[in-house]
Length: 110
Image (cartoon, rainbow, N blue to C red; front, side, top):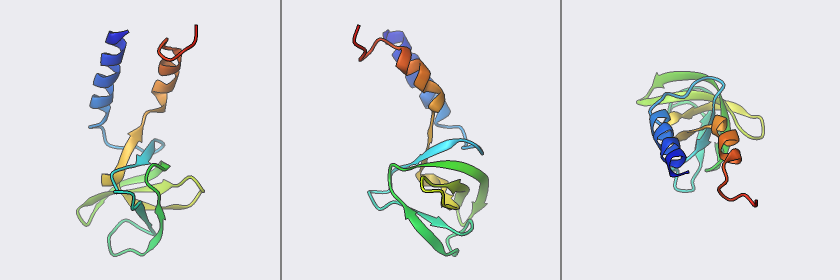
């Protein structure tokens, strides 16, 4: 069992260096509770549409676009709004591991 856990950590570390891709899901992280500004287009000078709360999961639909020192992604938020966010505050969500974790014996009642 320990080997599975170590393997999952190693895979997660490897995936953390991969650039987000269209069709992937990502979680808003490290905003200090302030949330992440969604803008009408990629760039700091573009108007903000709203703030996506920390912990929210978004779907990557466009990008990456390099502008103003950030890598920007076009995303759809949990309520269905579309806009652009800076990727520095996004962390990939690896949905493909859920079946593996669910099949493990950890936390399951026999």
